[in-house]
Image (tube, rainbow, N blue to C red; front, top):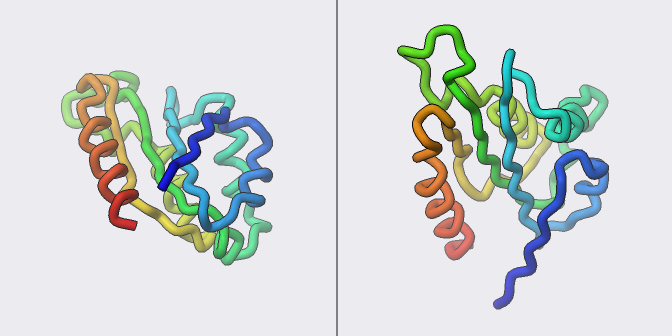
Length: 135
């Protein structure tokens, strides 16, 4: 079986993602910057899915998803005790919201920290491919 891959910017009309069917997997790579804010491009995508007017079944029968968060705990005040979980609020929020809207997750949420050299990314990519091969 072949796999078609497209790379798109998150700000590119996020509503169009709703046109994607069950055979599509969308991998969101979301960066959290200062003050738990998304980047400008990622923000439009996150804001779209966080709309309170969406029905709870918005994503049923739509694309499957994976979310990888990329943050930097150096930006946090308490750098000594922070981890990747503390600096990836945007990815965590998006992941939770996609699940709440009936989305089908293909792999656990991935959280990476710039301060640790993003060492969490490779293991997450491995689990991503493993889950794709199993499905």
